[in-house]
Length: 165
Image (cartoon, rainbow, N blue to C red; front, side):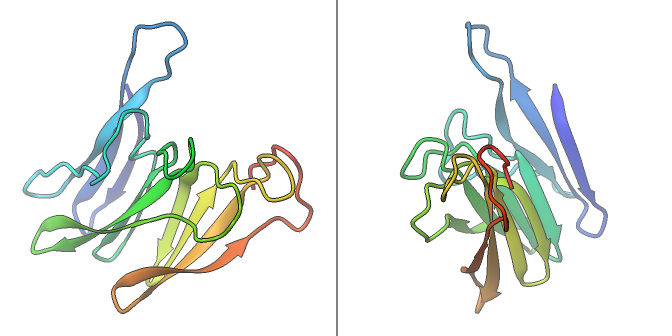
């Protein structure tokens, strides 16, 4: 079963988010990998692969860069999430960086949404808790000398519990 498809004709890259159905009670479907292909047909896997991390739940593309979210990865806490940055070099996708927010909020589902424009990347964390459980946040990153660095945390003006900003 596929969850979504993203196409970038300039890079000839697309991602199909595949789910493995687990036949035990209460189990959630889990993506196997972000199936990213170019002319040579490689599949992109994260360096920190794990079950139920949902690697490939979101994808942003710009130029030779791809950001792929893993919103349920356990990065210091359950379901904190992370995002992976890949660069296309000589026709191959090379993992350059794995990012997490560097603030004191209880982060939840970081990488659930992504958008990239040039050297700016915005990563949504739909269940981040600051003052209210699950109010959500967006994190702004900028590529500086080839490294993605957090610049800002965006919160709703009027946060509400469960709003998933």
